[in-house]
Length: 277
Image (cartoon, rainbow, N blue to C red; front, side, top):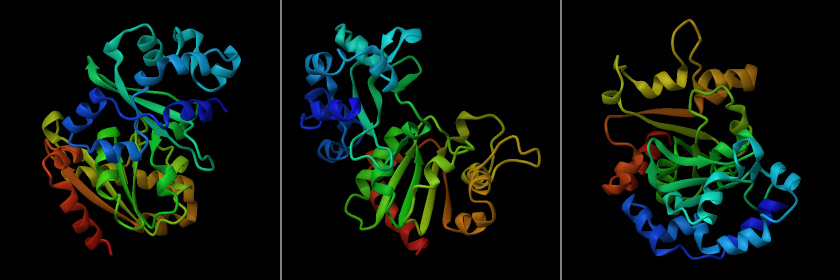
């Protein structure tokens, strides 16, 4: 009930000017992001402290909001309560199937701290996946990685009937825990696997990287692709599941969020859908 209570404190908040400016700098429409549940918790810190963080420690631990070994209250919330604006960010809700309120959160920092861009929260693998609340009944699901790419695609498909995005965050496309989200795409008739890979940032450039990530690498089986995850989860039904996916090779320096900032993603997605109809 803690996450339901927390959502009740922030769901009606407007986006702050700081948050709106950050989202716009990423090419994201703040109004669309608000509809997706993105919020700036800095506007409700006092209410969160009084209404949530004074609960019993065991309750907060169970909800993933307190960890003695990690300093207590969830790091970004703790730092913002202490007045440390280096942790200012936008918070993206994570829904689990069967719940009408978020059960986890991803705190995207406005200004990265070194290599740290996002601080994830959660008590289950489900919390690394964005968009399951919308995608579970969609007939077409676009699979991407990371918060900016997910938010970009989710904004672009908002008015497309039966088309939704999911974002794999921390759980990478090659992770074998694919059953955590595949089992919840109950209405999916086709999937589009649109994971960006920048060859320029990698030694030993590979061709058709998205297909590599999808089908896995080499006879050793050390790198499991999504297809192997499907086999592990679906068993004999894997072939039908695999055939539901179209694999895009989104390669180069520009990821999906870059496309969106350039005004190209919204026009590209219908071509993906036409090719898989």
